Image (cartoon, rainbow, N blue to C red):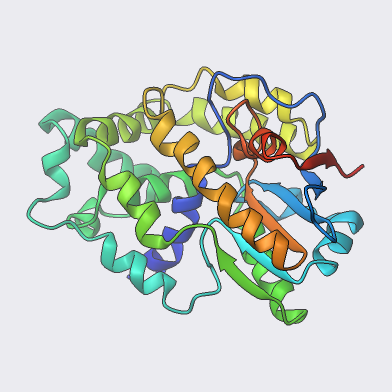
Length: 289
């Protein structure tokens, strides 16, 4: 269970690192953006992350380090510096009133059981009382072609500790958990079985995403995921509403002092993405080259 609790934060964020919404992405390609204007006395910064990546592909540029150091506080999607976060996630991940097998047909559950035994090397019975997204988190980690993995969010938490900066969250653990709880059982089951049935293809697609992420190519990332069926029909809840809720919090934080925001790269792009929403509020948002 200790190992499982360490997996959960990665999954919660993994769902949002790319934006599959059908909208026009920014013309400029960059992961790091400067926010100025609209009464701000000093610039703040916005960075797009990919939440889980092989250590060999992980990079933090000198410009990123400089902007991080110039900021007084750090905002992630959730406060990953909260010592109670893992326990909260674990408690919220337990099913109440049903079993994992209730989400799947008999044949799908048998296939899922075989997949966990043969590919994940973990008995499915161990997860019998856990919500479906826990399975998804474990499958996602198995997709990476490495054992040595890195998280940008956790790296930023460590950097913040070294520089004695406060880490805050744009939303709570409960907020993120509720999003998945509100998804129909059939949708959750379909997502998991798609990854089981297309595991090798999903691994290839993820490798392509990592390659484009390393190029900081938001346009290519956007195009790559628009065909993904995983959240079609749920874009408003999973992406648009969240982006909109973040803007007032970002404005309040930036007016107080220079702030470094790090969210999944997919939240940056599109007509309803964070970059465009900030511009609509009168801020100048430009890439840091």
